[in-house]
Length: 408
Image (cartoon, rainbow, N blue to C red; front, top):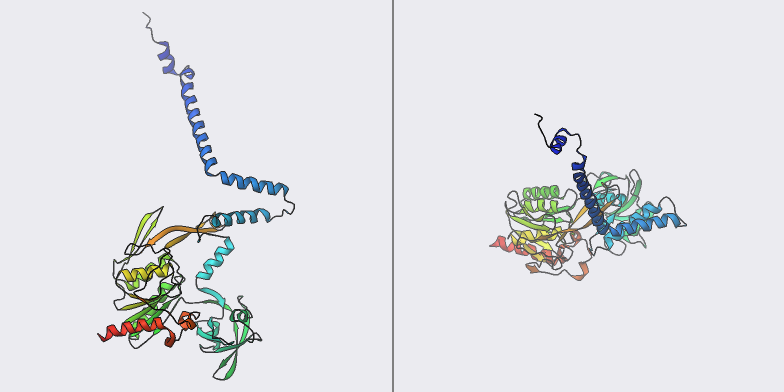
């Protein structure tokens, strides 16, 4: 007897005629892929409609601009990126070309090509060398702090501002410059070859036999190492109390200020809490025990960002008493993002807000010192480190506070 089988099963089992069963499946897959592509296209068209407008505008310029040259497209892209950051409503947003960002990084590294001196305008055409940095052409030539500049490459100081006078000194690697100074009534001439030097962000001294003084001008470069060295040196000179000065310190790196806080706070102390859209909340704490001695901290209206973060951390942890005026009030953090790995520049904009240990974001309000002290009007334009002690009412108040603690 011949066995009967189902033709459908037989054909499908042996694969002789599968098409009429697989076509619906293939068609469904095709339709699903097409729908996904359409939805993706609509999404990106909606998200990046503005980019289409920019691309179309650039195409119109390329086809019709009478003065078109090889730099036109590059300049238009640069202008568009500058416009992007300028229109964000973020006061701190900025676009840097590749060259501009390299200059920015170099400027904040503390390294520059020069002779290695700090000069202040004492008024009436007196330009005073207030500091000579170590391992620099100026130090090797014999220039000393206290020298008064008279000429630079043959140009005198008469009728010049400090900035216009310093323009007579060139700053390319290998440039040779000659300056004349007045020292103890004698004119001395020095010739130096310019090279890369490092300008420190920390200066320090013993203020009294037991009170040390550290000034931090910014949280850049090698500031962490500099603060560590300052503390070590001052302790070796007998420091038992400290004045920590961040007046006119406009801030710097979040990483650097947290490491500096580590030097002055006990282990596991809360430094700051940073909140953002991406990470939501990141808590920064100290990793080791820091300096255990009374600290008076000096702040003013130009103490901003990282210096405010440090001030808030020391104040809220009871590690320092603050003297001076209300700080600037910058409680937000900016982040840098490379475009095409930096080949097309870098953009910077606000990404985070930081909170003091007491849970306050000081954006727009600043930190109020424990003791408010104003500086005399005739010294407000001095560089902080150059204010004579007899006129520095804020420093005097901090020293008096520490001396009173010692007396008790």
